[in-house]
Image (cartoon, rainbow, N blue to C red):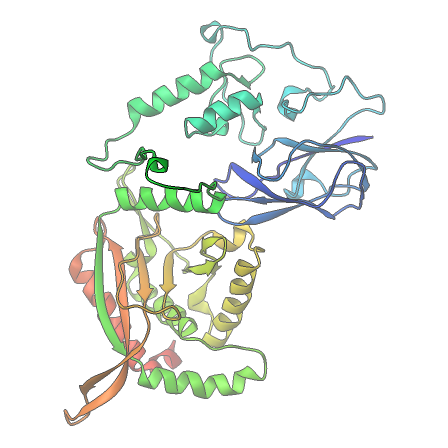
Length: 437
């Protein structure tokens, strides 16, 4: 029987991705659960497993292609699927033993009824002839490749476009109407220019162009939106880390034999998680549409990880309920997954506060951009030895850790930011407080 494999649901708000690796070719025999290709989203690389054992009859994508959730990518000739769409691993449709006329690659499963009866082509139906039909969230989008390409060129996803055709198919006119609505409803951002038209640099010398990866595109879009919509304030301070380093090295010596690497970041995660309970506003989000403050009853700390593919932010969940050793173990696993490209969308969702540590690279203070819809982010720089007053005001050299707290000034006032940073410094300088949490 024929089995169609479609782009799976890859996480909340993720609607498209880019094919970065294909493990099979036409004619290959695959086993159920075997990885057949990898899709890079703006958050992670998702491995797509085969839903059944069988032979690859048609491979409809190539490395570098951008694909939408629900798009047909592979056709198998095989046995009954053992992996179902209910697990959200793949989207599969099994046809009758006598298959109907082959469906062209550009058509998605949304164009076929359960009885495998093809609806009439509706591309020529005038836009005004029928009322727009709202597509259920779980139904894949039916749109020709030319329409998808047209939508991408305008910077929108066909998943967001409503169809004006009875069969639910998206046309070029539907995309134009959607973009027109966006342009008329979009708030102005003052002098902010989201896109700058570049001059022809080749007039001045040789240039080289390369396409941006999906992760880089999503990072650029997210940072631009955050910078444009969030009024940033950055509060800076230094914390003496002598006692923290003594504690870290003493505990680390005992833990290294068990394969646990106790880092400063692990301590900072625990300290910040403790403070977010005391200062819940820093663990909130602001809803300007509904004019509401969304307070969260959970503490999930995102950790910015520098990788060859770009900046990724895996999340330590329920950090307030874990001790430093548990956090250190989890950080090790998440960092390894990030650098090997094995983070799942779930590993990178649900964050309520972010920490970005540039200490291993160097440099002094910096101003991190708030990872909206979070309202605060902590930037950490490299520890430097400085001359500071000792117990009797005698000069001593001590390790000083630069801290930069950026926050959303729509929700957090300067005094609240100063209190948070002051409390942060106090716990770093006297880590024994952690024993009470």
